[in-house]
Length: 456
Image 1 (cartoon, rainbow, N blue to C red):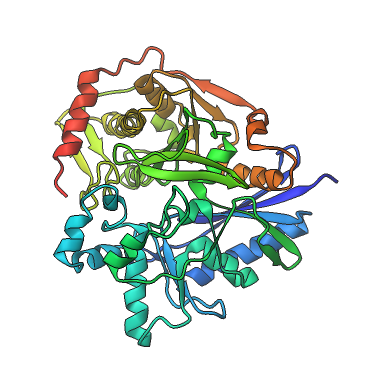
Image 2: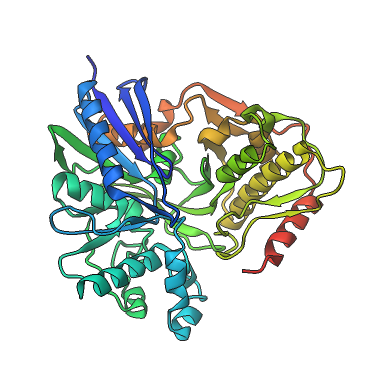
């Protein structure tokens, strides 16, 4: 039997396992639903239990190693024994916003100046860290042996008792400079914290063993998806349409531009792939909202003909770009004759316009656009994105790019292939074109104008 690779993706609503063979055929797939509390936190013990179960399932199916991806920008606290002492503060938690309001006025003022505006903001990972740091200090009289860091770091510590964080996650915390992986003393000074940073490891590093299974890849979910779609060269654009819509544009070297987040896409040895990102946090959740109220009855409704001139800004939990964390969703131009299809069209156009805005702000000429994630199964959405960008959108039949990326990272770590060779792993690629759809510049400009007018 050929080598098999276990791949586990810890997401907001589920934990998924895929087992791949060496030819990237899916041998097994399953998902375990998880629950986010009303306060926007996850139970770390539940997530850890899921991961342990799925590692053993992968072992049962012949996998000798696993890779782990987690959702990003979230913090959790645990003790030296590996037991959590807090919930996981996810991007849905309002706690960090309350912490932000308590910051001294001069710190909030400085936090409006780029690039600090990406770090000292209401829903940033650094503010989630500060929230937990204050809670632990108040509850225990001090931080002591408590570790506070990102979700993948907690899971790995609980499995192996090794305190590490991968390069892609660490670079998004606000405490580690994505340009050189050194601590950012300015941020810690402004926030008044002294984080104990983990050892920062490559995404292809061997981490340790759990129950005889090697942990051999570690990455943030969106960056693993870039690897899964072989988006590792400048000008390649990866779009993940899942819970939210995440647009990653690969660039040559470190870049800070247009309010976008500088990314480490992947790190292996001396090779660091970089990019920039903008995202719409709740696009997929907006589809779920339309399903709950009966506007969308089936996902095939998303492929119906375009209709109407309603505008729908799906900011159900704020906006990252432009930075308006307090804004909530808006439906505009709704009339007596507006139909269900008009609302669906408005949502899909808003997602496509947001993708265009991110790509335009990056200033990087587009070579190819690749889409993945459950919502990318909608031809209607991808046609709109293609029409807005003026280039075709590529979609592999297997839209689980994060899981596939973890398998590829394990293979790269074993020396079976290089980053440059990942392009040949793409298969069953569909080309979606927006031919025949006319999206006027005026319509896009009106959408941007509404977006900018929203008060946060």
